[in-house]
Amino acid sequence: MAIRSSNAGETALREAEPGARGGGVFRPRELLLMGVWFGLATGLMELAGNLFWIKGLGWISYDTLRTNWHYVWLTPLSNLVLFVVAASAIAFASIWIERLRRGRLAFFLLGLMAAWSFVLAVSGLDEVARLVLALGAASVLVRWFAGRERSFLRLARWTAPAGLALVAALMAGSLAQTAWRQRAGNSPAGEDAAPNVLLIVLDTVRADSLSPYGYERDTTPNLARFAAKGTLFEEARSTAPWTLPSHASLFTGRWPFEMSVDVGRPLDGTFPTLAERLSARGYATGGFVANLENCNAWYGLSRGFHHYEDYYENAVVSPLEVLRCSRLGRFAATSKLGWSLVKMVAKPESYRYRKTAAMINRDALAWVSEQGDRPFFLFLNYFDVHDPYVPPAGAERRFSTRSPDEAASPEDKARDAYDDCLAYLDDQVGRLLDELERRGTLRNTLVVITADHGEAFGEHGLSGHGVSLYGPETRIPMIVVYPSQAPAGRRVAHPVSLRDVPATVLDLLGGEDATAPFPGASLASAWSADPISADAAEPVLVEVDRADRVPPEVEDAPARLGLMRSVVAPGRAYIVNGDGREELYDLDADPEELHDLADSPDSEDELERFRAELQRITRLEPPSDGGDQPYTRALR
Image 1 (cartoon, rainbow, N blue to C red):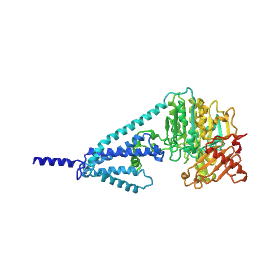
Image 2: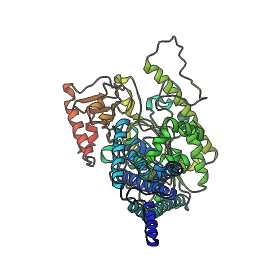
Image 3: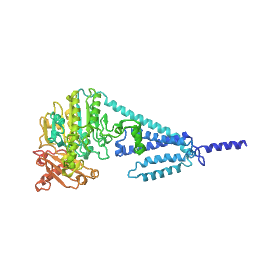
Image 4: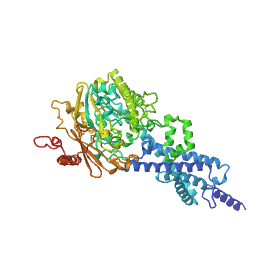
């Protein structure tokens, strides 16, 4: 009888263990272990997928741009927190619900969460399709789990500590990297009394909308005042009519076709950047951008900067950022209930915002104050003039003064609002420069003010940017002010390119490397001892290749036809459309590009020379000696 009692007790103990035939009982701590394992497994798999897409394939999505820079440990941590919270709720409910103690239902619920995380990564699916897939995947997991409860627990007990250790190591590595970057930014200067560099980009600003470029409205008196202290280039052209490739050219001196950068594709490490070069020379390098999408650090534009700010939150570790760093967390935060909770915890204006010029100035000046006597390279991107053309609250609206009864086209109303934004931006740029002047900083600072592209307001029946290669989208301001070097009041008429900026900066700073490693011509040649003549100026290239990204409302946009390229030479603009159609304009007689000369029999020789020049530029061949006269003189 005693033996039988002993055997009965052993049988009862075995049946109480998970995995016994007929189902066992999971203790609350075992249910929590199940949550920890699912959280780590889901988080590390999500991280591996992100690394594959971002680092391996170099693909960027909109969600990527709002990914925290500490994502390598925040992504698994976010999943871990969510699954542990869910497992804790299951463990608590298991006190009253016996079925939960048997494990399979808990395993199914946690498996459903994991499956939902993965189906969220599949684009193009509606919620019903995602739910069906997730339920199917969770059901398959439960079938595997049945009869393997003890094996699963052994697996979880062995692997969960290793997973936690890996997350801790990733956290330590990420924080150490951040600390190293900060130390590098605060290291001693490499050159005594080296000049500072201030590079200002006025996002979406066309040259002919500014006072120093002869605009009928006095939109930018501060820029006009500052431009009088240096050299203004009247025919500066962007390399592309949209932000991302033009900024990449600005930093590398390369044409868009040479670089990896594109919609969803970051700038790779093939070519050095201006920030990298100046950082190597001992400069503190800081970038502050208001175009939070196309100037985002995830696009590779932050290379070489010790400090680079796009979204404030991308560099912050907070409970809300932990939540946002996983697909499940973002799904929960953006749901109706989740968004209500977010608004209770974080003010909406701190969660969604548009950086104003005043915010950029505040952040940039604070950073400059931290540098002490160390020379700095400061890059600023102002976004206030970008659509929808709404000045910040409290800004004066000097040009949107039409009464409701006044007849005005949509383009005219948009231009009025655009000019209001310009006036606000000019005021803030003036405040920045005046403050740097008050501090005595400008006396030893090279300042370059330019834009990434312009904006169309009905010219050629087009609006916006990135839709053509006409002047309103590609002609940009270019102002260089450098005490004792750039002549005050000088105006240069021949074409120059945005890609010339890196070579110009290194040339003016001097040193053994001169303009290396950047191609392009130094703008200083315009005031050198042997200044380049307009006839000898190098033609500049502009291109756009984003047919699938043209807004649907711009139905007749030339960019819809595919790759477009333009060569701008002194007095001439040549365009090749995606369908092969050519255009030719006399910019001296027809600055608005209204009369296409390409069909004129008298233009055939000139067209042939432009075709050859375009082929030379895109093959990266050096300029021709041109015999007795520069090759570009023949283009005229």
